[in-house]
Length: 619
Image (tube, rainbow, N blue to C red; front, side):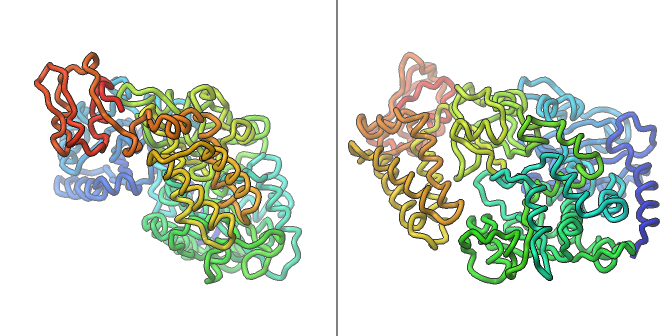
C-alpha cells in the first residue's frame, strides 16, 4: 500500500530519472534502449531483441544503459523499432542479430549504425523519430505514453502524471464538476456513434439505482482495427484511472473491462495494471482516505463481433449469449444486472485523464467546431506507412493517406478508403479533401466508426469489397432478428451471384431495396449498418456493378470467374517477374521480349497482376 504522499514522491523522483524519454536535450550519462513490444513487433521477434540487448549489456558489463519494453510506436511498417534515448536515434526493421552491432557501435563507441536507420518513403535516411513525415501531422493525446513508458511498470506511469487526474478529482472536484469538464471538452464516444461523452455520464449519474457500474468496451472486432488493443498494450493504467474517474462522477464503485481473448498481451497487461494499482492502494476501499472506493475486473469475450454492441456486451458479461437487447431502456438506466451502467470504449477513456489535467478549454481547442480533440486510426491496406496514427479532427483524408501514410505503393493510384469497417462506407478520390470528422463523413455516406481506415488502390474490385464485408457480417450476425439473420444472407447471395458472372438485370435494384429494409428493421447497429458497404460502393462505383452484370467483366481482375488475363505487348518489358512468380507456369516468354499467358493453364490467381511493375497484365 502507498499513501498519496508516497505516490507523489514516486512521481517526483521518477520523472527526473525518465526525463531523457521525452527530452532529447536531457543532460544524462544514462541511455535507454526502447524496444516496441506490442503485438505487431512481438510477431517479428521483438521479445528476442529485448532479451538479446539485456544479455549483451550484462555480458559486457556496460553501465548506465537500460533496455525498456514499450507499447506501439505507431509506425508498424517499420517494426520492430528500436529507439535510443536521449539522442532519439531511430532504428527500423531490427532483427535479434542486430543487437550486438547496435551495442558495440552505438552504445560503446557512439557511432550510428547507418544500415539500420529508418528510411522515409522517398528513401531519405532519417536519424530521429520526429523527422519522419509519418509523425509530423500527428498529435498524440490518447497515445501519449505509448512507445514512451514500460506499460508493465506502474512507477513509470506515475512519473508521467499517472493518477494525478484521479487525485485532482477526489480532492478538488465534485462529481458534477467532473461531468461538466468532460461535457465542455466536447469529447464524443470514440466507439463509432460519436455520442457526447459528458451527456452519457450525466444520464447515468441521474439514473436511480442502489448500485451502478462502469464498463469499458474493448471488444474491438472490425477487420483491420487495432487502436484499442494498442492503447491497452502500451498504456493500460490510463484506462484504469479514467474508469475510476468515471466511477466517481456517476456514483459507481465497480467496473468491468470487456476485452476479446484474442488480445493476450493487452489482457495480460491490463490485469497487471489492476494488480499493481491494488497493491499500491489506488484501487480498493477508501482510496487515499477520500471516502471513494472502486474495484475493477477483466471479462474475456470469445470473439463475437456483435458483442461490440453495448447491450450484447452486457449480456455476455452476465454470462448469457451475446445478443442485443431492445432499446429503450438504455444502459444508463438499466444496464448490467439491470442497474444503471456507463459504457465507453478504450479510446474514449484514454482521453479523460488528459482533459481533467489540462482542462476542457484545452481539449475543445483541438479539432473542429462539432468534433473536438483527436482520433486514432489504424491505417492499413494499400498504403506505404501502415500503422497507428492519431490526428486532430478535421485533418483531411488526403493528409492521412499521402502525408502521414506516405502514399500508395508500387506506383498504383488511390481508389477508395473504407472507414468504419463492415459498418462504414468508402471515401473516393473526389472526396480526398473531406475533413475527417463525424458530420463530414456522414455527409458523404461514410462514418467515423471506431477507427479502422483501409486504403485501396486501383487494383481492387469494389463489388468484391462489398461481398467481403457482407461475408463478415453474415458470419457475425447473432441471429436474433430476421432482417439481419436472413436479409444479410440474401444480400451476400446476390453479391456472390454478381461476382461469379451470373448477375441479371434488376439485381442492383434488388440490392438497394433489400439494403433499405435491413437498415430500417434490424434490432441493433450490426444489422442497421451491415448494408452500408453495399450502398456506399453502389453510390460511387455503380458502373463496376453494371460491368459485372452486363459485360461479365471485372476491371480489377479480382473476381476470378470474370477474369481472362492477357499481357499488353506494348507495356510488357519482358522482365520475367510474372513468369517467375506464376505458381502453375502459365506464362511464356524470353527476357526483354513480351510475354504471353497460356489461358488453359492459368488459374486466375492474380499473382502476375500484383507482381508486374509495368501494369501490363490486364483482365
